[in-house]
Amino acid sequence: MKVELLVSEWCSACKQAEQVWQQVAAEKEIEFAVLDMAQPEGRELVSRLRLKTVPALVIDGELRGAGVQTPAQAREWTASAPPRRQAAVQNAGLLLSLDNRLFILGAVLCLMAGGSGLVINGSLLSDGPARPVAMHLVTIGFMLMLLYGLGAHMLPRFMSRPIRNGVWPWLQMGLVQLGLLGYVVGFWAARPVLVIAGGGLVWLSLAIFTWRLWPVLWFAPDTTETRPGHS
Image 1 (tube, helix red, strand yellow):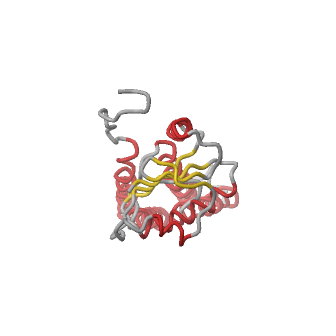
Image 2 (image 1 turned 120 degrees about the horizontal axis):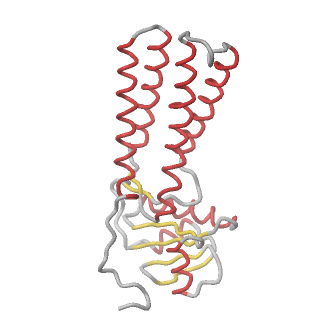
Image 3 (image 1 turned 180 degrees about the horizontal axis):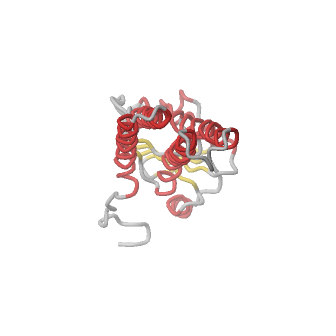
């Protein structure tokens, strides 16, 4: 069963509809996607079904309803779908998931810590251990984790393709945090082995992020699919 929720940035009710269907998608073995009407896939759906309002719900290619459904109604419409065993992939919609919110929050905290270190200790111009600590808090702590949070949210949405979720974002988060800790302690205590270990953990987090994004960026399109108006 394929369930598509058409939404728009300016639609406040769309966020409520997405919350309902994200919950049902976590319970039911359905192919769920959130499509923004400003994106090509969303515009195509609007044109094909002549939709005039959002949020709009499309099930297996047919318009099923408009507005915000209750969880009970959503479960009734997906009653024929089997229970979901494991949520391995997820389409990103308007709402930030918990892991992406934590990545962004961690990035901001690292930016504050790293920026404070650069200003208070004057470490930007010094050669002491505070300089590499502050620089890695900004580069890895802020820039990399901000990339993790925003990339995992925005790329699946813009490409309309799912990203691997499950335990992977949490493992990715743990590795980058431990790697950053290894850098900080290693540089501050002059322990090169900790710096090397920290770099290895950060590299593993990058490898997991790349693997999660694989179906988003390197997904092979189905060239045999027939689009409306074509044969």
